Image 1 (cartoon, rainbow, N blue to C red):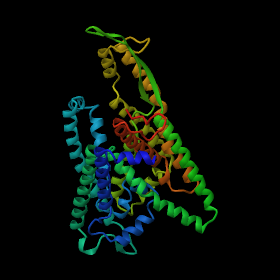
Image 2: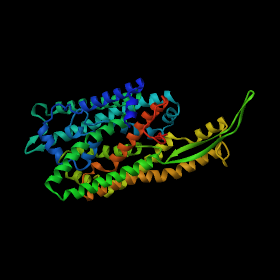
Image 3: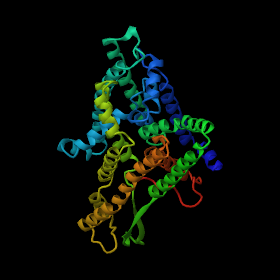
Length: 439
């Protein structure tokens, strides 16, 4: 492993990508400590400390603790994800959007621009709601907004600050994707989750020091985390390999022998995208409604308890959304008709299956069968560890959602690093075999 790490920095191109990615991550974490103007930090800290076990804590996990501190990056990348979901769904409704999705690089460029506009809109709406919410918070008669900023001035300042922070976060993620290593948006969420682990470990240790019996709960939570991580790695790397044969070819005076290859179909073709999409759907509406309803809304408190991350209703809806987005995103990234047409043009075929339409139908049936267990697995891993750990008294922060995102993004990034190493004839991270890519 040490030799592999040293080899990574021997390749100039890869070294630049790694340092650039680390620089962007540093800037993201630095911006996460810039406070939003006009907020009484002591009052807000007191309120957030007693209200971070529900939906707020779940949202705070995705933004690396920035929401709890109410920094300029408090919204994180979530408005961008919401805008991306809307654009993907619109492609199934509006023919013009669907046409852009199939136009290649030029179409993706236009869709990316529309997604950016949507990010600004959703960011501004969410920032306005949070501003109203913050202004309603009081602690012993002291408002969470400093006296000099109360009124319209406070409403305008956070909207501008938080929306700008969201746009900056979006830009940082895009820069990592274009010039760094890994998927920038996923990597920023990954860093936010990982950054909160030390504080959670310290909290667990402190509870053990106070209550010696708490060590049993901590060990149980650790066992669940390890078991879930192993299961995620196995399922993420699981494949259904479709045999592909190509016939002999005669080019000029030479004859080229046929080849036997495989078409690997992942059980989880969509990666961590369904988890991120489903989480965004489950948090965005609730955050908006709660924000505009205010901190003292008893009705919304009842709704929050009903749809809280540790409740049965939340778990069922969350699991169903994960299954839906797994099928939805898999249909976007893998088109059986295109694969069948490419095989037919290259002279390849699946043994026992006619080229063309029959091959497309075969691939579609296989994909539907393997996507079902893959999507159900994602839903179970996202929900069950969270419920089990809540029963042990542990925080849902260490639930299946965070495990899926951390493991999925880590494997995807390692695969990109390994591909760079193998292109330069260096040994990768795996002594036997290699890390398999997502697609």
